[in-house]
Amino acid sequence: MTGEAPAHVLVLGGTTEGRALAAALDGRPSLRVTSSLAGRVAHPRLPAGQVRIGGFGGPDGLAAWLRAEGVTAVVDATHPFAAGMSRNAALAAAATGVPLLVLRRPGFAPVPGDRWHPVPSLTAAAELLPGLGRRVFLSSGRQGIGAFAHLDGLHFLARSVDPPEPPVPSSIEVLLDRGPFTLDGERALLRDHRIDVVVTKDSGGAATAPKLTAARELGLSVVVVVRPPVPEGVPVAADVGGAVRWLERTV
Ligand code: NAP
Image (spheres, rainbow, N blue to C red):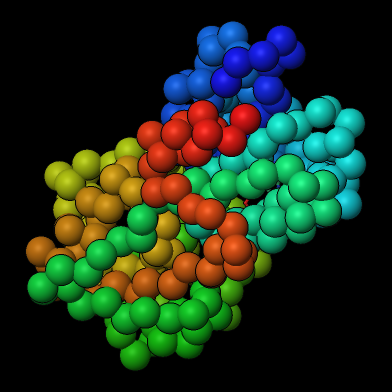
Protein backbone atom coordinates (compact mmCIF):
# COMPACT_ATOMS: atom_id res chain seq x y z
CA MET A 1 0.00 0.00 0.00
CA THR A 2 2.45 2.67 -1.18
CA GLY A 3 2.40 5.25 -3.94
CA GLU A 4 1.39 8.86 -4.32
CA ALA A 5 -2.39 8.90 -4.59
CA PRO A 6 -4.08 6.89 -1.84
CA ALA A 7 -5.89 3.80 -3.03
CA HIS A 8 -9.68 4.16 -2.77
CA VAL A 9 -11.43 1.25 -1.05
CA LEU A 10 -15.21 0.94 -1.03
CA VAL A 11 -16.60 -1.05 1.89
CA LEU A 12 -20.21 -2.14 1.37
CA GLY A 13 -21.36 -2.24 4.96
CA GLY A 14 -24.37 -2.36 7.25
CA THR A 15 -22.72 -4.95 9.50
CA THR A 16 -20.45 -5.23 12.54
CA GLU A 17 -17.68 -6.49 10.22
CA GLY A 18 -18.09 -3.52 7.88
CA ARG A 19 -17.64 -1.12 10.81
CA ALA A 20 -14.70 -3.10 12.18
CA LEU A 21 -12.98 -3.08 8.79
CA ALA A 22 -13.47 0.68 8.39
CA ALA A 23 -12.02 1.16 11.88
CA ALA A 24 -9.04 -1.08 11.09
CA LEU A 25 -8.24 0.87 7.90
CA ASP A 26 -8.97 4.34 9.29
CA GLY A 27 -5.94 6.62 9.40
CA ARG A 28 -3.74 4.66 6.96
CA PRO A 29 -2.23 7.39 4.76
CA SER A 30 -2.01 5.06 1.76
CA LEU A 31 -5.77 4.43 1.79
CA ARG A 32 -8.94 6.38 1.31
CA VAL A 33 -11.91 4.38 2.59
CA THR A 34 -15.57 5.00 1.83
CA SER A 35 -18.19 2.94 3.66
CA SER A 36 -21.57 2.56 2.02
CA LEU A 37 -24.84 1.95 3.86
CA ALA A 38 -28.21 1.16 2.28
CA GLY A 39 -30.08 3.64 4.48
CA ARG A 40 -32.58 1.11 5.88
CA VAL A 41 -31.98 1.88 9.57
CA ALA A 42 -33.20 5.26 10.85
CA HIS A 43 -30.19 5.87 13.13
CA PRO A 44 -27.36 3.63 11.93
CA ARG A 45 -24.13 3.12 13.86
CA LEU A 46 -21.78 4.94 11.53
CA PRO A 47 -18.40 3.48 10.56
CA ALA A 48 -15.17 5.47 11.00
CA GLY A 49 -14.13 7.64 8.06
CA GLN A 50 -16.08 8.67 5.01
CA VAL A 51 -19.63 7.33 4.68
CA ARG A 52 -22.17 7.46 1.86
CA ILE A 53 -25.79 6.37 2.30
CA GLY A 54 -28.34 5.01 -0.21
CA GLY A 55 -28.47 2.63 -3.17
CA PHE A 56 -26.27 3.03 -6.25
CA GLY A 57 -28.99 2.20 -8.78
CA GLY A 58 -28.29 -1.46 -9.56
CA PRO A 59 -25.07 -3.00 -10.90
CA ASP A 60 -24.73 -0.35 -13.63
CA GLY A 61 -25.08 2.46 -11.11
CA LEU A 62 -22.47 0.86 -8.88
CA ALA A 63 -20.10 0.33 -11.84
CA ALA A 64 -20.49 4.01 -12.77
CA TRP A 65 -19.80 5.01 -9.15
CA LEU A 66 -16.65 2.85 -9.01
CA ARG A 67 -15.34 4.50 -12.18
CA ALA A 68 -16.29 8.05 -11.19
CA GLU A 69 -14.73 7.72 -7.73
CA GLY A 70 -11.60 5.92 -8.91
CA VAL A 71 -12.23 2.94 -6.63
CA THR A 72 -9.29 0.50 -6.53
CA ALA A 73 -10.89 -2.32 -4.53
CA VAL A 74 -14.30 -3.25 -3.12
CA VAL A 75 -14.98 -5.21 0.04
CA ASP A 76 -18.52 -6.53 0.20
CA ALA A 77 -19.06 -6.65 3.96
CA THR A 78 -22.85 -6.65 3.68
CA HIS A 79 -25.02 -8.99 5.72
CA PRO A 80 -24.97 -12.65 4.55
CA PHE A 81 -28.62 -12.25 3.50
CA ALA A 82 -28.10 -9.05 1.48
CA ALA A 83 -27.89 -11.21 -1.66
CA GLY A 84 -29.05 -8.50 -4.06
CA MET A 85 -26.24 -6.15 -3.10
CA SER A 86 -23.67 -8.96 -3.25
CA ARG A 87 -24.84 -9.90 -6.72
CA ASN A 88 -24.68 -6.27 -7.87
CA ALA A 89 -21.17 -5.93 -6.46
CA ALA A 90 -20.01 -9.05 -8.34
CA LEU A 91 -21.51 -7.78 -11.61
CA ALA A 92 -20.06 -4.27 -11.19
CA ALA A 93 -16.64 -5.64 -10.28
CA ALA A 94 -16.66 -7.88 -13.36
CA ALA A 95 -17.73 -4.97 -15.57
CA THR A 96 -15.07 -2.58 -14.28
CA GLY A 97 -12.22 -4.96 -13.45
CA VAL A 98 -12.10 -3.62 -9.87
CA PRO A 99 -11.02 -6.42 -7.47
CA LEU A 100 -13.77 -7.59 -5.11
CA LEU A 101 -13.63 -9.49 -1.85
CA VAL A 102 -16.59 -10.76 0.16
CA LEU A 103 -16.09 -10.40 3.92
CA ARG A 104 -18.50 -12.89 5.41
CA ARG A 105 -18.53 -14.20 8.94
CA PRO A 106 -18.98 -17.97 9.30
CA GLY A 107 -22.54 -19.23 9.79
CA PHE A 108 -23.94 -20.66 13.01
CA ALA A 109 -22.77 -24.22 13.69
CA PRO A 110 -25.20 -26.69 15.32
CA VAL A 111 -24.03 -28.53 18.43
CA PRO A 112 -25.49 -31.63 20.14
CA GLY A 113 -28.83 -30.81 21.73
CA ASP A 114 -29.87 -28.31 19.07
CA ARG A 115 -33.30 -28.89 17.53
CA TRP A 116 -32.77 -27.04 14.28
CA HIS A 117 -35.00 -27.12 11.23
CA PRO A 118 -33.09 -25.72 8.23
CA VAL A 119 -35.29 -24.08 5.58
CA PRO A 120 -34.45 -22.29 2.33
CA SER A 121 -36.52 -19.13 2.91
CA LEU A 122 -38.73 -17.19 5.31
CA THR A 123 -41.74 -18.44 3.34
CA ALA A 124 -40.67 -22.03 4.02
CA ALA A 125 -40.15 -21.10 7.70
CA ALA A 126 -43.75 -19.82 7.84
CA GLU A 127 -45.05 -23.08 6.35
CA LEU A 128 -43.24 -25.13 8.98
CA LEU A 129 -44.15 -23.05 12.05
CA PRO A 130 -47.72 -24.23 12.84
CA GLY A 131 -46.39 -27.79 13.27
CA LEU A 132 -43.69 -26.67 15.70
CA GLY A 133 -45.24 -24.31 18.22
CA ARG A 134 -47.70 -21.56 19.11
CA ARG A 135 -45.52 -18.76 20.54
CA VAL A 136 -42.80 -17.70 18.14
CA PHE A 137 -39.72 -15.56 18.68
CA LEU A 138 -38.94 -13.93 15.33
CA SER A 139 -35.44 -12.52 15.17
CA SER A 140 -35.10 -12.61 11.42
CA GLY A 141 -35.27 -8.84 10.82
CA ARG A 142 -38.19 -6.50 10.30
CA GLN A 143 -38.10 -6.70 6.50
CA GLY A 144 -39.18 -10.34 6.44
CA ILE A 145 -42.02 -10.18 8.96
CA GLY A 146 -44.61 -10.00 6.17
CA ALA A 147 -43.90 -13.67 5.36
CA PHE A 148 -45.64 -14.59 8.66
CA ALA A 149 -48.55 -12.13 8.42
CA HIS A 150 -51.14 -14.78 7.49
CA LEU A 151 -50.46 -17.04 10.49
CA ASP A 152 -53.46 -16.04 12.60
CA GLY A 153 -53.29 -18.94 15.04
CA LEU A 154 -49.79 -18.09 16.29
CA HIS A 155 -48.44 -15.38 18.61
CA PHE A 156 -45.24 -13.60 17.60
CA LEU A 157 -42.58 -11.76 19.56
CA ALA A 158 -40.58 -9.88 16.91
CA ARG A 159 -37.28 -8.17 17.69
CA SER A 160 -35.88 -5.59 15.30
CA VAL A 161 -33.92 -2.32 15.27
CA ASP A 162 -36.76 -0.27 13.76
CA PRO A 163 -40.51 -1.02 13.85
CA PRO A 164 -41.77 -3.39 11.13
CA GLU A 165 -44.10 -2.11 8.46
CA PRO A 166 -47.40 -3.83 7.58
CA PRO A 167 -48.33 -6.51 6.79
CA VAL A 168 -47.58 -8.10 10.17
CA PRO A 169 -49.26 -11.03 11.99
CA SER A 170 -52.48 -10.21 13.88
CA SER A 171 -50.98 -11.28 17.21
CA ILE A 172 -47.58 -9.63 17.48
CA GLU A 173 -45.51 -7.90 20.13
CA VAL A 174 -42.58 -5.88 18.81
CA LEU A 175 -39.40 -5.46 20.80
CA LEU A 176 -37.16 -2.68 19.49
CA ASP A 177 -33.57 -3.57 20.30
CA ARG A 178 -30.23 -4.21 18.67
CA GLY A 179 -27.42 -6.58 19.62
CA PRO A 180 -25.14 -7.65 21.01
CA PHE A 181 -27.38 -9.75 23.26
CA THR A 182 -26.36 -11.74 26.36
CA LEU A 183 -27.14 -15.35 27.19
CA ASP A 184 -28.84 -14.33 30.45
CA GLY A 185 -30.96 -11.81 28.59
CA GLU A 186 -31.95 -14.26 25.86
CA ARG A 187 -32.83 -16.97 28.40
CA ALA A 188 -35.05 -14.54 30.31
CA LEU A 189 -36.67 -13.28 27.11
CA LEU A 190 -37.60 -16.77 25.88
CA ARG A 191 -38.88 -17.82 29.31
CA ASP A 192 -40.80 -14.62 30.13
CA HIS A 193 -42.61 -14.70 26.81
CA ARG A 194 -43.21 -18.49 27.02
CA ILE A 195 -41.67 -18.93 23.57
CA ASP A 196 -41.83 -22.44 22.13
CA VAL A 197 -40.19 -21.91 18.73
CA VAL A 198 -37.51 -19.52 17.43
CA VAL A 199 -37.02 -18.32 13.84
CA THR A 200 -33.62 -17.01 12.79
CA LYS A 201 -31.57 -16.47 9.68
CA ASP A 202 -28.16 -18.16 9.64
CA SER A 203 -26.55 -14.77 10.10
CA GLY A 204 -23.65 -16.08 12.16
CA GLY A 205 -21.67 -13.84 14.49
CA ALA A 206 -21.29 -13.59 18.22
CA ALA A 207 -23.79 -10.74 18.65
CA THR A 208 -26.84 -12.90 17.97
CA ALA A 209 -25.63 -16.43 18.83
CA PRO A 210 -26.76 -16.42 22.52
CA LYS A 211 -30.42 -16.92 21.50
CA LEU A 212 -29.41 -20.27 19.99
CA THR A 213 -27.71 -21.36 23.20
CA ALA A 214 -30.74 -20.26 25.22
CA ALA A 215 -33.08 -22.14 22.85
CA ARG A 216 -30.96 -25.30 23.19
CA GLU A 217 -30.99 -25.06 26.99
CA LEU A 218 -34.77 -24.69 26.98
CA GLY A 219 -35.24 -27.51 24.44
CA LEU A 220 -36.91 -25.22 21.88
CA SER A 221 -37.18 -25.83 18.15
CA VAL A 222 -35.28 -23.35 16.00
CA VAL A 223 -36.18 -22.74 12.37
CA VAL A 224 -32.96 -21.67 10.65
CA VAL A 225 -33.12 -19.98 7.24
CA VAL A 226 -29.99 -21.07 5.35
CA ARG A 227 -27.78 -18.49 3.64
CA PRO A 228 -27.87 -17.58 0.00
CA PRO A 229 -24.58 -18.52 -1.71
CA VAL A 230 -21.75 -16.03 -2.27
CA PRO A 231 -21.57 -15.06 -5.98
CA GLU A 232 -19.46 -17.56 -7.88
CA GLY A 233 -15.77 -16.87 -8.30
CA VAL A 234 -15.58 -14.09 -5.69
CA PRO A 235 -12.93 -14.66 -2.98
CA VAL A 236 -14.16 -14.73 0.62
CA ALA A 237 -12.52 -13.67 3.89
CA ALA A 238 -14.07 -14.92 7.13
CA ASP A 239 -12.84 -12.04 9.31
CA VAL A 240 -11.55 -8.49 9.28
CA GLY A 241 -7.89 -9.61 9.51
CA GLY A 242 -8.33 -11.65 6.34
CA ALA A 243 -9.87 -8.67 4.54
CA VAL A 244 -7.01 -6.38 5.61
CA ARG A 245 -4.44 -8.90 4.33
CA TRP A 246 -6.31 -9.19 1.02
CA LEU A 247 -6.29 -5.39 0.68
CA GLU A 248 -2.57 -5.22 1.47
CA ARG A 249 -1.93 -7.71 -1.35
CA THR A 250 -4.42 -6.17 -3.77
CA VAL A 251 -4.14 -2.35 -3.72
P1 NAP B 1 -30.31 -6.30 -0.57
O1 NAP B 1 -31.69 -6.80 -0.66
O2 NAP B 1 -29.21 -7.19 -0.95
O3 NAP B 1 -30.12 -4.97 -1.42
C1 NAP B 1 -31.20 -4.27 -2.01
C2 NAP B 1 -30.67 -2.95 -2.51
O4 NAP B 1 -30.33 -2.10 -1.41
C3 NAP B 1 -29.41 -3.06 -3.32
O5 NAP B 1 -29.68 -3.43 -4.65
C4 NAP B 1 -28.85 -1.67 -3.18
O6 NAP B 1 -29.58 -0.74 -3.98
C5 NAP B 1 -29.18 -1.33 -1.76
N1 NAP B 1 -28.10 -1.66 -0.84
C6 NAP B 1 -27.97 -2.77 -0.07
N2 NAP B 1 -26.86 -2.70 0.69
C7 NAP B 1 -26.27 -1.51 0.39
C8 NAP B 1 -25.11 -0.86 0.85
N3 NAP B 1 -24.30 -1.39 1.79
N4 NAP B 1 -24.82 0.36 0.30
C9 NAP B 1 -25.62 0.91 -0.64
N5 NAP B 1 -26.74 0.35 -1.11
C10 NAP B 1 -27.07 -0.85 -0.60
O7 NAP B 1 -30.02 -5.74 0.90
P2 NAP B 1 -30.89 -5.88 2.24
O8 NAP B 1 -30.96 -7.31 2.61
O9 NAP B 1 -32.11 -5.05 2.10
O10 NAP B 1 -29.88 -5.17 3.28
C11 NAP B 1 -29.72 -3.78 3.24
C12 NAP B 1 -28.56 -3.42 4.16
O11 NAP B 1 -28.83 -3.85 5.49
C13 NAP B 1 -27.23 -4.06 3.73
O12 NAP B 1 -26.25 -3.05 3.76
C14 NAP B 1 -26.98 -5.12 4.77
O13 NAP B 1 -25.60 -5.25 5.06
C15 NAP B 1 -27.78 -4.63 5.98
N6 NAP B 1 -28.36 -5.72 6.77
C16 NAP B 1 -29.16 -6.64 6.17
C17 NAP B 1 -29.70 -7.66 6.91
C18 NAP B 1 -30.56 -8.74 6.28
O14 NAP B 1 -31.00 -9.65 7.00
N7 NAP B 1 -30.81 -8.72 4.98
C19 NAP B 1 -29.43 -7.73 8.28
C20 NAP B 1 -28.60 -6.76 8.88
C21 NAP B 1 -28.08 -5.76 8.11
P3 NAP B 1 -29.11 -0.31 -5.46
O15 NAP B 1 -29.43 -1.47 -6.35
O16 NAP B 1 -29.89 0.91 -5.73
O17 NAP B 1 -27.62 -0.05 -5.38
